[in-house]
Structures are given as C-alpha cells and as structure tokens.
Amino acid sequence: MIKEKFELNNKIAVITGASKGIGKAMAQGLAEFGATVIVSSRKQEAVDEVAKEFTDLGLKADSIECHVAKHDDRVKLVEKVIKKYGRIDVLINNAGTNPYFGPISKMPVNLYQKTMDINVNSAIELSNLVYPHMKKQGGGSVIHISSIEGLHPSAFMAAYNVSKAALIMAGKNQSIEWGRNNIRVNIICPGYVKTKLSAALLENEVSRNSFLKNCSLGRGSTPDEMAGLAVFLASDASSYMTGTTIVNDGGLMNAPQISMQ
Ligand SMILES: NC(=O)c1ccc[n+]([C@@H]2O[C@H](COP(=O)([O-])OP(=O)(O)OC[C@H]3O[C@@H](n4cnc5c(N)ncnc54)[C@H](OP(=O)(O)O)[C@@H]3O)[C@@H](O)[C@H]2O)c1
Image 1 (cartoon, rainbow, N blue to C red):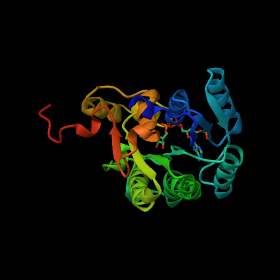
Image 2 (image 1 turned 45 degrees about the horizontal axis):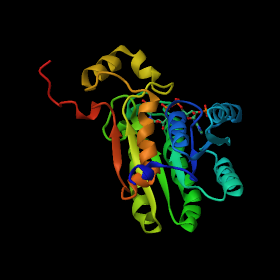
Image 3 (image 1 turned 30 degrees about the vertical axis):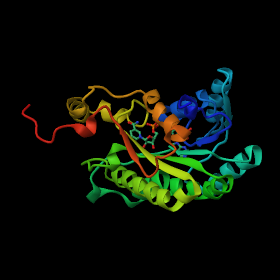
Image 4 (image 1 turned 180 degrees about the vertical axis):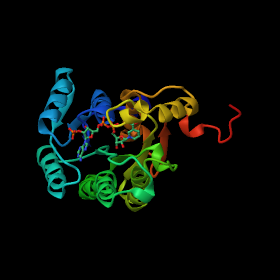
C-alpha cells in the first residue's frame, strides 16, 4: 500500500528549533504520522511545553534542549536520544537565525560568523554526529531547512543568503557521501512563512509590497503549510529522493523577471 509509506510509526525524529514556528509545525506533522519526536531548542522550558502540548494530543514527544551552535549541546542531544531510544531515523536541521539586515560590504564579521555557525556549521556537525547511528541502523533521513534566500541574492540579507546557499550545498554533498548507506539528505527552501523570524520583512513597507507583488499566491504561508513536505521527506514515500532542493514558496521564485506593471 502506497499510503502506508507515509507512516512514521516506530521512527525517532529529532527536530532542532522546534519550540515554535516552522520547526514546531514540522514536529507536530511527523508526530501525527506516528513518529516519536524529540523537540529541541535552546530553552528546556520552551521545549517541555511543546512536548506536553503534543503528548496531551495523544502524540509521542520528548524534549531536549540544545543550542545548536554549542558543540557540547549537540553531542549531548545525540547521546541522550541514542541512550533512551537507541536510534535516530530523522534529523531536521531547522534552527536558524538572521541577525543582520544589510549589504555584504558592511556585514560585521561577528554577525556573519554567528549566522554561519547557527545556520550551516551546526547543521553539518549535528548531521555528522547522527551519521554513524543512521549508518549502523541501515538508513535515515536528514532534512535541512534552508530558504529561497539561499537560491537568489538580496540587497539586505547578505549573511543569511550566504549561509542558506552553503547549507544547500552541504546537504547535496552529504547526499552523495551517504547515499550508499541508505541515508537520504534533502533540503527544503521555504519562501515567506509567518513566524517571529520573518516578522521584520512584513513590517517593512518596501519588502512587504515587493513580496505581495511577486508571490503568485499573494500571501505568506503558515508554518503548518511547511509540515507536509517534512513528513514526505522523513517517510518511505520519498525513499528514492536524495540531494534534492524543494522550494515551497507560493510561487515567489517564479516571479517574472520583467514586468509591465
Ligand atoms: N519564516 C520564514 O519566512 C522562513 C523562510 C525560509 C526559511 N526559514 C527558516 O526556517 C527555520 C525556522 O525559522 P522560523 O521562521 O520558524 O523561526 P522562529 O519562529 O523564529 O523559530 C526559530 C526556532 O529556532 C530556535 N532557535 C533559535 N536559535 C537557536 C539555536 N541557536 N539553537 C537551537 N534552537 C534555536 C527557537 O527556539 P528557542 O528560542 O527556544 O531556542 C525557535 O524554536 C530557520 O532555519 C529559518 O531560516 C524561515
């Protein structure tokens, strides 16, 4: 039955940055399809609350804090999950940041470094920690949450653009290295999703008008509109997909380059 391929029963899924926004919606989606989800973010109380919300709904959820840019936190996260559950079937590298709005020529080194540490380096290193376990257990699915900002340049999000482009290539490299171990690595590029992280873009009149003009669906998405893709990529329904970059942006990347309006 093809329908059964979407089921995530008996799968252990770790989602970073899952206390709110896209990560939380993806965690709930995976849990609704049967996975035990490990909700993770910097704050234990925040992830405890989300895990409780899920278990109150009858879903399987646990919570472990992890600041993804901290090496010790990453090691502890993986160790704790392996100790308790013995395996990790799905890793969603979702935690991300955008602390700098401005051009590349004025980008402060410390903010560039912070962006790269959280958006790229942590995702590579967390995947590297999970890799031997997935290899040993016979496979797994790693999903990186990049952005359409990793696919095109912008005049005001330089560090973020660079980091999200690098994350796409990290995922592609991992996919060729790990494919023979049945570990699939795919990348999701959301467009504009209404969360705390993206609020500044809609508050600014110029970016809001530009977005509304270019987005085919004429609106930002809700976090749960990102969750279905995560379920698909986590599940056996996508068993032949790896190294793929999937855009989910309401048609924003499809905007005509030349307009008469
Ligand atoms: N929103 C969009 O329009 C959009 C578009 C494209 C891509 N994305 C990407 O989607 C991902 C999620 O973004 P979002 O919009 O859902 O953001 P959000 O609503 O602000 O949520 C961010 C999540 O990440 C956690 N977090 C932040 N820094 C962390 C760190 N250093 N270590 C661990 N967790 C951390 C936060 O929880 P705590 O505060 O509890 O740590 C929170 O759970 C990001 O990678 C972002 O770049 C977003």
